[in-house]
Image 1 (cartoon, helix red, strand yellow):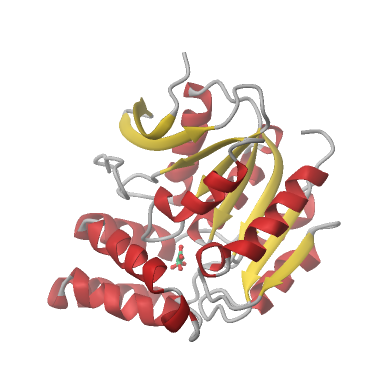
Image 2 (cartoon, rainbow, N blue to C red; image 1 turned 120 degrees about the vertical axis):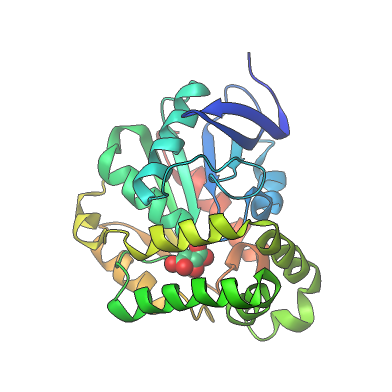
Length: 274
Ligand code: MLT
């Protein structure tokens, strides 16, 4: 039996996972994977827009939103296992994946290891490289900073880097929602995810092996994973499309949902075998 709604809880990979599942039973499936340290609600506008024509699922990665965190150390590989277990639990054989930033790292690792489970990819504001020594050092400093100054201070610092300058005047509601998502994440989960991100493997070398349709999107003013990183991905995946989203920084789907949704719908409706 399928449960419909936006805070469904299910035990997946020995963990309580919270997810939204909407849209017709027999429609093509799109699974949305959020970035760090956000949660599934960052995809609310996309789910609303697509749910008449697609079965749309967004879930909270372990340690985020309303999903439990479990006792293990986090890793991108563990997050991928959670995703595959969720698909199995929901009896989803194949899906389109849409991941933003950390969600993109998960999507790229998932397709590298389980290519037969995915019909198409949407990669937003993400990159394929591993952390440089400097980036790793910055993550360790962030952990120290959260320990010393707390999560509110971390949220303020993050917000200042996440959005395009104009979003601070035009997207007040979205910024408040993102702040809420960040402060809802426990310190332990922040530390565990920062460590997982710092040791993630690069996926650039495997990009030429991707044979499904791929749409890449990036906010024109994304400072964290800039357009140059998106070009690098596009260059390596034959036949992939790249759209630069105007008026957006790192959270393109929230800062310019109109263009993001237009491109997303155009792309999924063009995928022939769905
Ligand atoms: C994200 O939005 O998921 C993060 O920027 C990813 C990262 O810190 O590498």
